[in-house]
Structure formats: structure tokens, C-alpha cells
Image 1 (cartoon, rainbow, N blue to C red):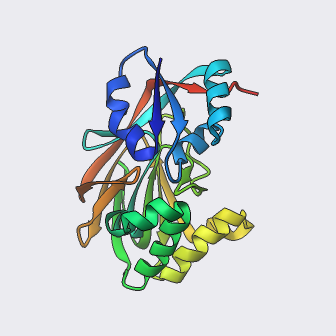
Image 2 (cartoon, rainbow, N blue to C red; image 1 turned 90 degrees about the horizontal axis):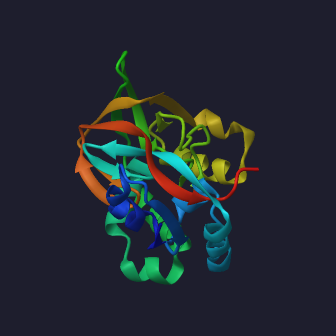
Length: 234
């Protein structure tokens, strides 16, 4: 077992070392949003996380890959990469998740919708979107947004906030955070083991909070890729 403390970006940067190994990855959630820890059900307080490592169980989970860049939880196109690239470090350090939300609200004023093209191997889907989430896990930005994603499903979920309204994107986040029944009406989902993603204009993807390649790119799932320390089932 290797115990790794940090946020989602730190975890994804280091997960390649565990791929194809019997070494168990154990997580201390020390990041801003800790989306992967939330997806796995790891307690967010240090004492609870340590207790889970000592008394939990090993689980085999999937990884996702964008052009060979492996990640644990989530990638995104749209407003999220803009925020990740431009958020002042002082704001992030002092206010944490609240700082991200405040900067996202500020950045939304200059953000415009884009054309999203998703090839699922059977057909090509084209739509206007304000955000696209490429999900291995359920949480994004610390909020449970992609409820249909599963770390052991053998599939990737691409969830698009459909339309051209930034207000609709804000409502999607709020509705998901509050578990409003109508939250599913703002999004459209595609799923499968491998997909091709493109945009107009070209955009950079944010991979677990860190900037990755430009579109177009291929995303695929790597089933049963790594062992992780997780809470006991039930």
C-alpha cells in the first residue's frame, strides 16, 4: 500500500504508477474539492480517512484515459478549464471551494457556449453546450453531478449541459447540489467504453483540475485498472 495525500490533481498525476500493479492506492483527501474521495465514500476529515485506511477494504476500480493521460475521476470542457487556468492562487488557497465558485461566477460573464461533437462508435452527436463532463466518478467540483457514473462499470459517461445559456449552466449546478428532481432536464448523457470528443472552437480539457490536451481527443475506460483502499461495502 502507498498512502497519498492531496487533491484530485495530485492523485491523477500519480495514478499511472499504480496501473497494472497489485499495490493499493490509499487516499488522504487534502485537496480543495476532493471529488474522487467523495466518489469513493472516503471520509473527508483526516481522522476518518486514516480509520478507513486501517479498517476498510481493497477494491479494484476503473481508470479513464484521454489520449494516454490516465485519471481517476473527472475531466471537463467549457467553463471549468477556464476557471482552473485563471483562478488566482491566493483566492483558491484562502477560500477553497468557495473561491472556485466565486471565480466561476466572475468568469461566466465572458464565457460563450460551444459546439460539442461526441462520437460513440455508432453515431456522431452534435449539440450546443456550456459544459461537458467526462466522468469516471460521480463528483465534479465537489458536487455529485454525474449520478449515473460508476467506478466499476467499464464505461465512461459524457454528460453535457445542453444549450447556449450560462444561466442554465448555473441552474444545473444548483439543481444538482440541492437534488432538485428537474436537475436531469438540463443535461444529456452519452456512455460507452470509448468515445471521440471534439469541439468548435478547439478547447483544452481540464483533467481532475489540471489542464490537459486540446480537442479533438479520444477518451476510453481501462477496466479494473488499479487497487484502492475503500470503505467496506454495506
